[in-house]
Image (cartoon, rainbow, N blue to C red; front, top):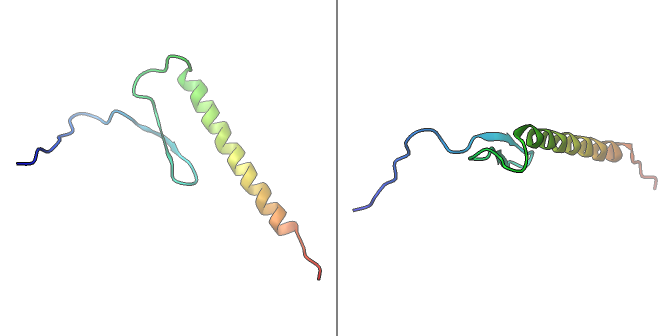
Length: 69
């Protein structure tokens, strides 16, 4: 006989966000002890903005380059 696990209650983790490559960032299961939740949110938001800026910069460089030959 195979035992099956039953999930009761809510999930232990919630999704904070998803990166452009599909990685899901989860919220901590318990309250953070070293960083406050607001600090973590600001760092994640800053990282996302920097990623978008970097991607836009790469697209601009690709479109602006011309080859003569």
